[in-house]
Image 1 (cartoon, protein in one colour):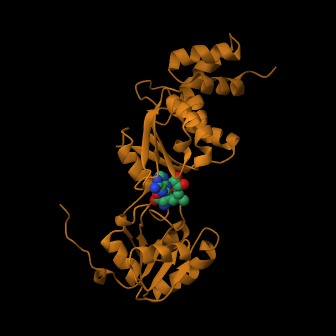
Image 2 (image 1 turned 180 degrees about the horizontal axis):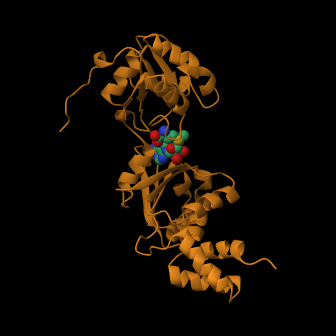
Image 3 (image 1 turned 120 degrees about the vertical axis):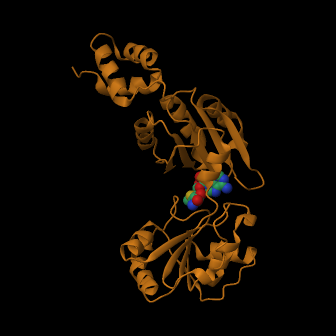
Length: 294
Ligand code: SAM
């Protein structure tokens, strides 16, 4: 049971920065409190002013205060000092991104850091977030998770990030561009192993909302044959490394070192996969890096 309704903006103290979550698709998800803050804040900062103005219109929110100003990844640093000055002068400032929760793969971090350092009150009007929505419907362990945001677009950099995550025991949550879904699932299956359970959540809260559940191997195959799977906005949820294996990167490399003394790379990877329960492809790539240079 909620502690108290606290639903009135009248409770907002002057000089407060408010991070406002907005819908990730379904406009019905804009909370009454978010609506009130978007209407009443002295200054509304938006990632894209036209986009937010459209949202306000669609949700029937008429701003009683001045205009909407932009704050996005390209102007955030230069805008921060001016916004902090206005907060210090007592303005209530709301920050909204194009969709979901500010700072979740969206702008706002520099402003929040500066406000916190200046002793300014920072509060959240919580609400939609694609990562959390996907995690809650994925049917994978949700008690402990790591949000990884977007993976690098370049394959080499992406694979490096995935290799560093291969032993992570927590459930992993990624944002992914639809045109990269297939290749990312292929990389994930190759590096984490095709048997690792995962889910692809697309178009959450929207008309074509679909959750695909399976293993990385089956999902990669499905992405290759089902064009719909790569349409729209996508969150990828991947179960963490099996804790019962208890084999971390250091231990896997210790096993590989021993094997590489005696057998070629491919054989070392195959045997190490049997010993550790980890993906052969991932071990093969590790072994290539570890093998003694002649
Ligand atoms: N701040 C947002 C949030 O709280 O979810 C995320 C912004 S990030 C720039 C945009 C990415 O979030 C998309 O590329 C997609 O990966 C994910 N996303 C946003 N809306 C989504 C939706 N309705 N369904 C699935 N994924 C979504």
